[in-house]
Length: 365
Image 1 (cartoon, rainbow, N blue to C red):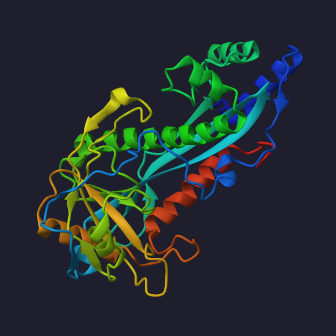
Image 2: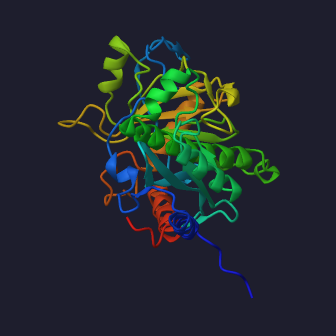
């Protein structure tokens, strides 16, 4: 008879009881809503983002708008979709230090010729991690860390990368800043899981004879064959001045000419570690999926990111035309429908159900 798997919620509940019985002083915060709900729509600074935009390297001449040729839906070779999801909770407050934990999930979805979607066997992954400042001065934090380490659970420091002890101590005593840093760190945990899944996908020998392309929801952090990154939130200003005016004025079914970005060093493996950053000569361009007349100039605007093997205008036109065929069916039940591909929407629902199963019984759920 199989033994039921112990979820992260049960492990946390057991640890909470042990701490209470040991007389460890901590404030329970598990009824708080997830950080994803608290910080929905909030853009937090990321230390990896350059503060001063640098010039891009054009690949097709000056930045201009180009009409994307029309191809029938059957011509598209997009067959797979990769995405991740996360749920991050405040667990305890130890003195001034908030202790958080995150549960992340990622998977690859496949779509057959008839349009039916399913998770590729073996690609659905779940990971848990505690988010605790390891160098906080409070002795109760050190005791908590020792207990968690003994249980073999993963602990990540949301203030990792801050070398100066005075700066670290100041942030470790700032309740709000630690919560913000924990949310950013949770995002990186999810990105890291997605990167490793994509790298594993791209190096699988089964992919050698597979002509299908995979769409990664978000930035392309790992360059593997036949992969496209689709960025829905246009927050990083790669194009400036007149080039940005061309971008914001793109008509529907038009793309910009392609370019190479100035930030060619991106994460690989552990997204929060500078030691895992590699040079990636990616090809980037923007595409307008739907008409933005009367709406925000960024409406239905996406950025596509392809590996260094994609350089010709013909390749870029072909990939863009495939992406245009992905506009339907529309995920109209989601406010992001104008940039959200339906298979990604479908995959997100599966991942959210996985997270709900893993966090069932959490006091704040």
